[in-house]
Each structure stands twice: as structure tokens, then as C-alpha cells.
Amino acid sequence: MTAPKTLLDQDGVQLTVDDAVATVTLANPAKRNAQSPALWRALAEAGRLLPGSVRVVVLRGEGKSFSAGLDRQAFTPEGFDGEPSFLDLARGSDEALDAEIATYQEAFTWWRRNDIVSIAAVQGHAIGAGFQLALACDLRVCADDAQFAMRETSLGLVPDLTGTHPLLSLVGYARALEICATGRFVHAEEAERTGLANLVVPAAELDAATQDLAAALLAAPRDAVVETKALLRDASGRTYDEQRTAERAAQARRLRDLAGLGE
Image (cartoon, rainbow, N blue to C red):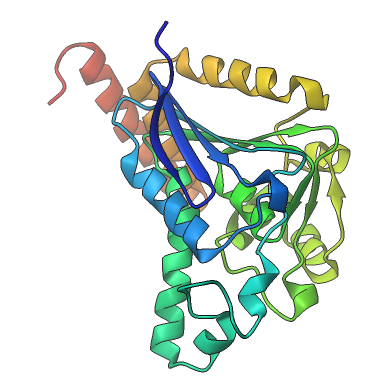
């Protein structure tokens, strides 16, 4: 058995690859894996560095919390060293502010690529940007001490790191609005009951349960999983008849491939 290969270790983000499984670790437990623009750039880079052999990506946080959200230093006049503060960004042009937020969002978008299945392993707090990062993944395995909260609205902001679309898809409009507008905690039991969590396990079993799910995802042929994920991702934007057509086309590709007739 070969040891996992480290491809990235910077700004609180580590990327290791072990055959078909990659692990992205938020590695600043002293600050409860608080997030910053530098961390977001590192997360985006992790997505670019994934080898083509990777089929499953596990996202985890070191320490007691998955991620406590945005580092509040971003809102101080000085901001982070070498970075414009959020207050400075707010004083800039609409175009510059939009472009900067779009750059931040890149850290949250690649997890739903059709060629991989991503799993967030969540323990402790997943607040704000931490909640949105867990939502960026396809699946969520949670420890029984997991607590989600969308605190942006309570701070006079909105969730802007791609979290609103998956949250709405998972729990529906009314509950998504209530979670965001109140900023309250969603505990592990409620997360599982409402569909935010695929599985809740004792904290000591989180890593093992995540590994078991990763292994189960690898059992089916890769191309079948890729096609199925694409069908499910796009289904909400299609009519019933359009989805039937998409299913037929996908199945035709799979049958031709299995018959050795693929391109």
C-alpha cells in the first residue's frame, strides 16, 4: 500500500491523493478553520490540481470544528496582510467588487463537477462560509455534534458563496429562508431529518463512515456514476419530457460503451 501523495499544503489547506480518493483538509484548527481569501484561493487551486484518476473527494476539517466561517479580520480596516479589506472592496467600483466576489466563489464551485463525487465530513461548527462549503459538496456525513448556521443575514450580509442554491434544493424555500433569516443553529438530528445530512454518526466514527461511503461510491463503474450525476444535477432545470430525452441519450451512450461501440 502506497502512502497518500501530498499535492498542496498552503494557507490552511492540504490536498492529498490516495489512488481514486482525494482528501482536502482545512488545517487551521487553532482558529477553528476560519476562512480567508487566501484559503479560498488555495481551495480553488486544490480543484485545479486534482489528477484525472480521482473519483471521490473528501473535505474535512482538523480539530473540533469543520469551519467556524469567515475570519472576522476581513471586516477590520486593516484586513489581512497583503489583502484589501472588505471595507476597501466596498469602496471600489461595482465591477471590481463583483469580480472579487466571483473569485472567492471559485473555491466553492468545483466540488459539484460531474467527474467527481464530493463528500463533506462535518464535525462541530459549520457556520456561514463553513456551512456554504459543506453545501458545496454533493454529500454530507455529519458527526452527532455537528451544528450548521447561516449567520450572514444576521451580520447584514447575504450568503454569497454559492450556498443558497443547494440549501433551497435540499430543504425547500420556507425552511431555507427561515434558516438564513434567523441565523439559528441546525443540529445534526435536524440536518439528517431535513436532508442536509446524508448520514449522522457518533463523532468517533466520522472518518470511518466517510471512508465507507467513499468506498461504496467507487464500487460502480466511473462512467455510469458520471452520467447519473449529470442527469440528477440538471433534472431540476428540465421538464419531465426533457429529462426523459436526456435519460435516453445517456443510456444510449452507456449501452454503446458497454458494447465496445463508444467513440
